[in-house]
Image 1 (cartoon, each protein chain N blue to C red):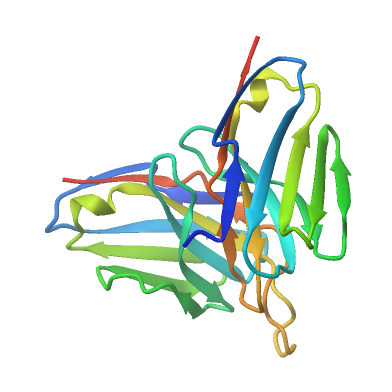
Image 2: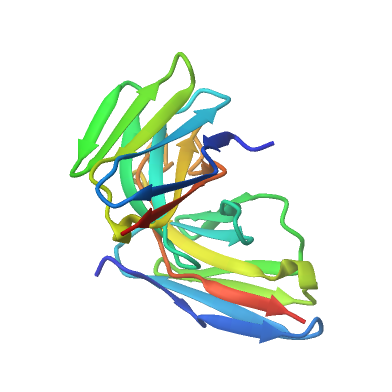
Length: 121
Length: 111
């Protein structure tokens, strides 16, 4: 299985709602990523998880809360979002160096899911 | 500021023609990757070139890398309508598992 899946495909929420985006992969990749992409712009990195631990947070507002419950799943919990948070949210995964190695980073390609189109009203 | 700048921003060609898009970056890289994105969808990895490589081929794709000029180019030969998409270069720098994407080139291939 070489696929990254994301649910839901589309989400409309109000500024007071709480919702979650889900991402799943079964390729055994131990790095998982959340990106935000606005129309006609490149993806912007939000979070990186390495071996289920948060390794990079690109100064993302606390209304976005990531969670990695196991090596196959990645969630993004949303609360009190603003209309400007409306965007395509992309999940990706990639293989990592062996645990215990000096360099755990991924030099490899990232596999992307199809994204969740989020609209905040 | 953006790590990678791509040009042209948009490119329109006819089927069968070649398409060339360029990427310039600012700091040293470990590798540079190219991705394609169909409208509103996820990104698909096309090709990866390491900092010690100068040229790489994959099917109709040819990528070059000039680390002295901090630039890369992607050539798509004999383009097809199905190649219509946005193309992004992405740079891996330092030791973090992090890619920084270029600004993208929107390619339109018409019949």
